[in-house]
Image (cartoon, rainbow, N blue to C red; front, side):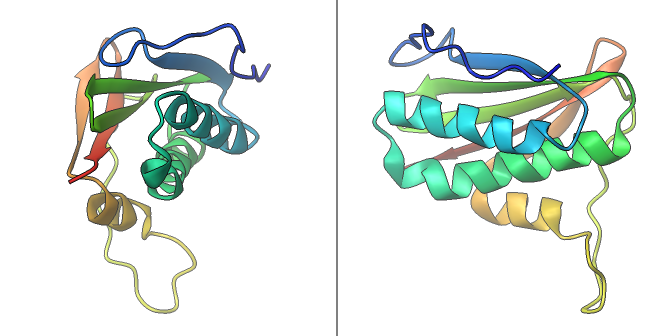
Length: 140
């Protein structure tokens, strides 16, 4: 079941709680996760980050949908500093994403390159039996 962001959530200006939702690991999770990120950035008055942030979360969730295991994927949007956000995608697969070098004819394989271009930093880390992949971006 895909959930939509709760309207009653009121993230703090910085730090926890941020926004977090868990979705079925299905393609429909991607647009719902983009909405979650856009809603958080609107609440935090950071519209300058929206275009890049929704692309980053779409790439990370798409990777989880295509390559992870388990029934669910969790997406969190945190604000560790006034001008910085962190997007976190958690899934049950212990396999880390691999940065590929796609050829011009490949239809895919560029997602993590895009994430690396838009984020100040990104990383995959063990989380329980699975992993979480996060990307930080912010205003300079």
